[in-house]
Length: 159
Image 1 (cartoon, rainbow, N blue to C red):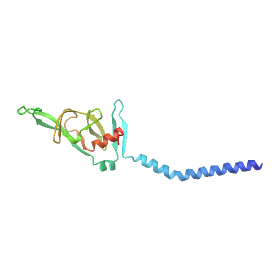
Image 2: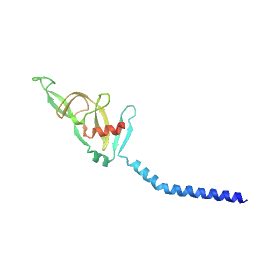
Image 3: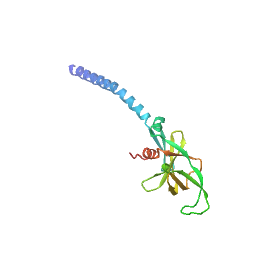
């Protein structure tokens, strides 16, 4: 009988210790959950593609200094000519262009406030701070001109 009483008391003390331990850890679990909810970037795969939607919290966007500028159209002569007839060409800031590990060129466009999607582009040439496109988004599309490399790092996990 004494063994049973001692066993019950041992189990009771074990349950109390476990409860106290869980209560002590609870604030840390809540803090971790809050921290995970407020991660600076959330990356969601886009179904049917190899791309992801990168969504930043507002503070992260401010810290990165994300800046946008529109794709412009300019009348430019053909590359490498001195007297060719100017044609309407799509132009972006050179700083908007990022390259992946295989050499493909990309830009980021905004799909919503603080949400960005990487898009492929084809470059004719770059001169100074201007990049002339062969293929890319239409004129007027807002592209990331400051912070694109950081978005790429968030999307691909590169640190």
